Image (cartoon, rainbow over all chains, first blue to last red; front, top):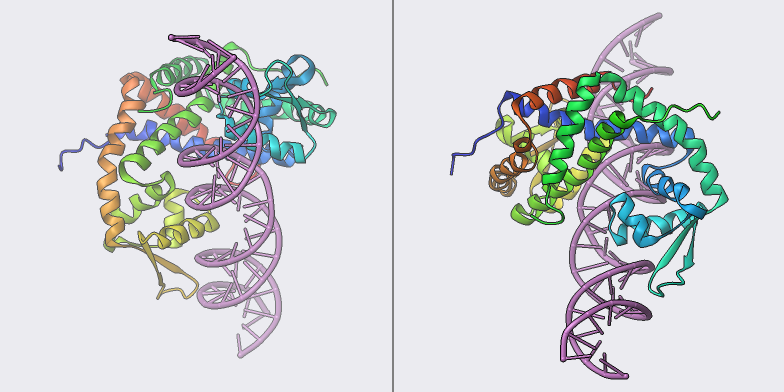
Length: 154
Length: 154
DNA sequence: CCAGTGATGTTGACGCGTCACTCATTCCGC
DNA sequence: GCGGAATGAGTGACGCGTCAACATCACTGG
């Protein structure tokens, strides 16, 4: 069983780049978000679709679909944000199983204050370091990788 | 203050690709690692440099440097792995402040069993979807982004 | 030698994410 | 209708990661 084909130079570089970036880039951006706006990455992620939804209300199921999270993850995060007053739970009229998540005024102010600086940071730390060609190549390549990934198992 | 320059089509695509991949790719790989080898991603990360170190021993400081983790993160993870018997702490002769981390036999067997399948999975889900040109472009681009990132603030 | 500074490591609190489980409700074949 | 599958949501346990605080030890200038 000693016939494993390890990564060559070129493969290792691209792979290390992906892993290293996943670690450091998100760390830098989340730190900035926390310092400048007092928001965690998870909070920002949920606040964006909520702020764009009509009335600032989304069903928990749909919120999860939009951001690609599972039910329990959404539920935990909404619980935490409810305690901080960014969001409120309401009953769902159409389906008694459902749960509605409503953006509070405090939540709306938080996301409005955080978003512009976050976009600047994304440009500053990621997009700004890339050429137009690289943007296209990376966009196309990563889309392809995403499509090939198994949905929820192997 | 309504003059924020949002992301255009091309930028958004590359950015969404990075974020989406960071989420799903690591999730897929960690699930596979856990199911096939009973190892978490964090465990795998520490076991690799330990298994390559002479004698299977590294100082905690150096272990942290190699994987790019802070002290407390290393300490917490070593504590968890110590409880599972993959690793053992020892005193450091050269520097009484230091702490040595030694790979146990169980730890060595775990990483030897896990590594080949993990490499296959990385190729299957990431590298295999990319052309040689894309590998080079991505490797070079992400290296450049990494170099421009602030070290710990900024 | 000694005080101050910096490096190393550990710990506790807290937020985040997954898994396994439970509960209520809706859907669907019959 | 009815009973079982499927769906939507919440919970507790546990692992992971960061931050702040702390303790210990090394180094350096005087």
